Every structure is written in C-alpha cells, then in structure tokens.
Length: 266
Length: 266
Image (tube, rainbow over all chains, first blue to last red; front, side):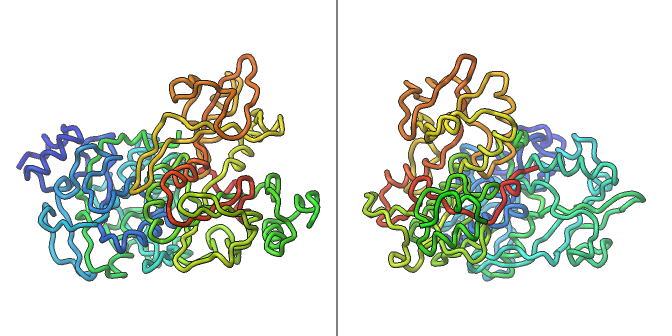
C-alpha cells in the first residue's frame, strides 16, 4: 500500500493506476485536488433505460457526468484509458437489492451489457464553496456530511421511485446568497440548493439525527441549507431491487481527468 | 382556423387546445411569449436508449427538457394534461430514415412503446439575447436562422453518430461577451456559444451559404457566433435510419407550460 501522503500528490491518472494495481484501497477524499470525482452505479442493460430516465428527471440529486455504452468499461468522456472495473478503490455489489460483497476489483463480476453511470459528487461544489470563502462545517469537524431522507418525492421513472435525499450545510445568514450563486454555477454536481431553512417543511424533524452521515453543529445566526445528494439514486435502487447492481463504496470515488472548473457554466 | 392575431394572445394551454381541435396548423413562433417551446423526437423503445445516451453526451446541441415513459404521450414535466399525439400543429413521419408524411395529428400512428423526447429550442435563449439588448439578425430580417453542418463531430452513442449542426448569429464585437453570459445562463436550451469567430476552423467555407435556413447580413465590426442547434439530432437520426420516427415539422413546436425563466440557472 502507498501511504496517504503520497497518494495526495498524484495526478488523476496516477491515482487510478495505483488503485488498479492494488496499491490503494482507501477513500479518495482530498486526492487529485481540482479534478472531478464521481459516484458510480452499474446496472444491467434492461434497467439502464429506467435509470437514465430517472437521472434525466431528477438532475439535482442525480447529475449525470457520463454514461457508458452497454458492456463498455471505459468512461471516455471523463478519462481516456480508465477501466471502471478496477480503477475505484472499493465497490459494493447488490443482488436483488441486498449488499452481498465489497470487492476492490470487479473484473470477475463483469457481464455483457452492463451500463455504467458516473454521477457528480459534492466534492466539486464544496471546493467552490471553500473558494468562495464559505464555511463547510463537516469538513471543519472532520466528519461526514449529514444526509436526510426528505418528504420531497423524486419524479418516478419506470420501476424507479423514492424520496429525495439531501445534504445539509449550515451557512451564516449573510452568506446564504453567496452559497446559492457559487453552487448554481455547477448544475452538473447538484447545483443550487433545493431548500433553505425550515427543515420541517421537507419532513426533517431533528437536524441532529441525520439518516446518513454525521450531525454537525449549527451555530447562532446560521441557516441550514439543503442540496440534492448523490445517495438518492442508491437509495432508490435499493428500494427497487434490480437483480444485479454495482456501486462505488461510500467515499471510494472514481477520480477523473476532468477539472472542476470544466463543470462551471461560467 | 383561428387567425394568427388571436393565437398570439393565448395561454400555452389554450394554444395546445386550439391545435388539438384542428383550429391551428401553422408555426408557433411568437406564441405564448415567455413560455418554453420544444423540439420533438419520437422513437421506438429499442432506439430510445441510444438516443437518450446521445443527448446525454451532446447536451449543447441536444438539451433534453423531458423524456416520456415508453408508450406515454403526456409530457408531465412540461405540461400536465398535454397530448404529444395531437398538440403540435404539424409532424414529420420517417420510415427507414425517409420522410413519408406530414400529418397534423399522429393518434392513428401511435404504437406501444414509443418514447418521446422534448428538446430545448433556441426561442428561449433568443428571448434572453433580446432582453440583454443584443441584436438577433434573422429576427430583424424576418428569415430563418442560418444553420451549418460543421466539421465538429458529436460524441457517438450506440448506433447514433454524426456532425454537430450549429446556428450562427452575428454579434457586434463589443457585445460578444454579453451574448456569452446571457446564453450560458440557459444550459438546457443550448447554453453558451460553442465557437466564436473563425468559421474556417469548424469547416464552414462560406457563411453566405448555410446548409439550412437563410443567410443573414454580417455587418462591419460583427463577429459570427455559433451555438449548438436542435437540428443536430434530426440530422443524426436521418443518417442512422431507425425503422420508425416522428418529429415536429420545423417551426411547429410543442408549446409548454414551463416559463423561460424557469430554465435559467440563476
């Protein structure tokens, strides 16, 4: 295994190479700074149309960065020469909606016709928040972002339906507008907030008890701001129980060759 | 038939009603000002995944506003209660890539499993250009926008491939930046320009001879500015010859209930 310090200094291609060769199997947070990291969902062709439709209809929680041809494991639009079967540090395999294994390589599990979806992750827009001088509390606290299963329904698509999952970041009231504009520039990585203040109105009873991730401190004068969360498609898939699916393991993302700034509309 | 003056004063729902009842079969330009109009492509389910993938990979020429479930003719996300089989003034039917008829209603042609794609059209962003005080020459001249088949290739998707078609609008050099920002706000209706100046570099030999539409005057001090064009998917489909396809007839768009401002990222 490489040490973490060394991994942090590598280019996206070098990170993928280290992962592919089994020299790294840990999380990718903080690696290849400035480059887009992505969530992965792999489905049989029979389910791929429904899922593509679901993402098209729910772009805030499920912003698509790349979809492969059936059977193809190279995400050409994000990284030439990459191999989605080996270049993520850890995967999760689901059979009939049940998590059955967490391998570091899925070459032996590959089947004809599998379609891979790469979905924007909040690392990119958190970079934009930090650059805009905004606090990102869970990063300050060294914990996971708090995620809430809300009462807002996703638009259904074929066999796929479910509630929208949102992340929350507390923002000082005077800086909320800046948080909106900074993230609105990045529609392909969740974009602008979906809800600002009033957690009750989206079915959140207790901010200190998130459904996923960790609670974070909300200080005097701060407003809870909610964004679409990439956990949404995984929650929806788990509920819909396709016969076979593979995702990345949480935090173990695909590191692409695309720069964060390439995703900005300006 | 209603007279044109009256049609111009109707709400989107009233326009669709008039069209559905056979009281209007003409173009929709200028109707329901401020509301989104859309291009239509209808394909059999077998081709729908490829086309959805094509649009995902080529969002500038093919910005998807809505995709229906297979067999469903109601574009719920754009207009509750609308019927895509009757609510556009005129359609084009293609069999094996050949245009065979131009009906005003396709209810008798409807088949199980057809998937409808509604694609952003430049009416919305031309509104944004006009509001930003920019000239739109073809509107001033009362002609169609000039369109060019460029040497820029679309990203292929399954059986679909082809060149990108772009529209051109001449913009005074001092206002080009404003044209960029005004349209970048609308990524779901072609977004920012793809190319500014230097038509040679994208394979355009003679601006006065567009491949579709009409030539427009380029005045001293103006720069040709090129945007992705919604004719691209139709050109690609014509080249790929699916067994059956239906599109809107040029200029005879779907008038939705969504407001143009709803498509702005800010």
